[in-house]
Amino acid sequence: MSAKATLRRTWPVLLSYAVFSMWGVACFMCALVLGTGGFGLQPGAWGILAGILGAVAIGHLAGNALGLAGFRLVPITAIFFLLLIGGTWLGIALGPVVLFLWIAVIAAYGGYLGIASRLDVVASWYPLMFCVGGAIVWMNTHGAVKTFDGGSKHMVWDAFTIICLAGGVFWMLVFLATRNALGLTVWQEVARPRAAEQPDVAVARPGRGSILVLMGFTLAVLGATALVSPYLFRTKEPDCKEEDGKVCYKGDSGGQGQGEGEGESDGKDLKGAKAKGKGKSVSKGSGSGSGGKGRGRGQGGKGEGADGDPMGEPDTDGASEAAAEAAKLGLNILLWLLVTAAILLFLYLVVLPPIRRAFLLKHLEKPLWPVAPTARVMNHWRRALAILAVAGIEPSAGETATDFAARAEKELKDTLGCDAPGLADAATIVEKIAFAGRGLGTADEQAVRDAVATFIGAVRPHLKLKSRLAAAWGRAPEVEA
Image (cartoon, rainbow, N blue to C red; front, side, top):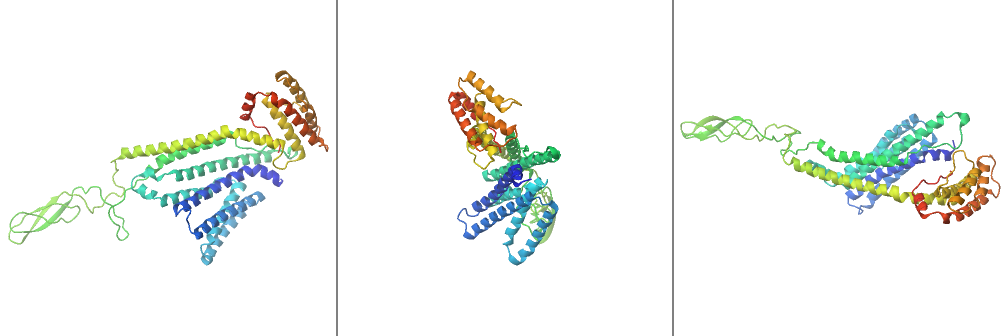
C-alpha cells in the first residue's frame, strides 16, 4: 500500500490523537503557568515548559512514524522499557534533564499504540495523564483541596478543571471512534478477495451524528460526576495533634465516665479537684480530720482525650444548605456546559455547512491540493452535478453521463426555461473516462473546464434564491480524491 493510501485511511486517527495529546499538554502547561506566577515566570521555567512541549511533539511524531511503518508491538514494547530503564540510569548521572527523555519515550509509545495496535484504550492513558495532572495542579495551587477538607466539597470544581476534564474525555471518545472506524476499514480490506481488490476503497468514517452523541455523552457523564463525586468522600479535620506518628481523633462526645477523686479535707465535705481515668468528671469527696484525704466517685463529663470514632458521627448540621449549594453549583456547571454545547451545535449545523460547501466548490473548480488529471475532470463534472442538484435534478442509479445530460437538458427547459450549453460535451468526455476505459486527450481537461463554466453561467441566474439558500445547508458536493 502506498504512503498516500495509508495517510488517506489513517489521517482521522492521526489528527484526533494529536489534538487529544495537545489538549492534555496544554491543560498541564496552563496549570503550571497560571498557577505558579502567571506569565511572569523566570526564563528557566519557560525553558522547562518548552522542553516538555518539544519532547512531547518529537516523541509523538516518532511514535506515529513507527506505527505507520508497520513495526510489531512486541519489539517496540521491549525497546520502550529498555529506554525507560536506560533513562533511569542516565538520570543518576545527568540529573533532571533526563526527564525530557522520559516524556519523549512515553509520548512515542502512546503515538505508536494510537495508530498501530488494538491497545487504543492504553494509548489514551498518556494524554489523560496530562489532563488529570493539570486539573490536580490547578486545584492544589488554588486552595481547592483545603476548601474540600473544610467541608465545601462542591467548591473543588471551577471552570478550568471542568474544561480540562471535559475536553480530555471528549477528545478521547473522538479518538476511539476514529480508531474503530479505521479498524472497520482494515477489516473490509482484509476480507475482500485479492482479485476483486481495487485502488478506490471506501474508507469508514464516523457519521455526522457521532460527534453530537459523543459531546452529549461527555456532558451528561461529566455533569453527573461533578455533582456526585465530591460527596463520596467524608472529611473531618481533627483538632488534636499527632504524636509519635500516632493518629489521634477528637471524640464527638465523651459519654459517661467514672473516676476517683482526691482532695484535702478539714472535716467538711469537699469536691474532688481532679478525676483520673477516661472522661473528665466531677466528683464529691468527704473526709474527716484536718489534712485528711477524702475519696469519692462520680460520673459524667465530656470526653477530652477519649478514643473517638476515626470516621466520626455523620455531620447533619447544615446538610440541607450544603446540598442546596451543591445542587446550585451543579446546575450552574450543567448550564454552562449546555450553553457551550448549544454554541458548538449552532456552529456545526448553521455556520459550518455553507462554509464547507463553498470550500468544496472552490476545490472542485481549482484544486487546493494536487490531484490527478482524471480527478480534475471528474471534479469539474461534479460542479455541474452540484448546480443541477440545486434545481432538483440528480442522476439515477446506473444512468450514464450522456443519458443524464440529455434528461437534464429537457428538465431544465421545462422547469427553469433555460438551455444547458456545454453539459452534453462535458458528459461525453466524462463517460469516456468512467466507462470506456480510455485516458484523457491533451485538450480534454480544458474542454471540460470550459464546458462546465459555460453551463454554470447559463443556469445559475435562473435558480431561485430559496433553492440556493436551501442548498447551502443541504448535502455537500462530493470530491474526487
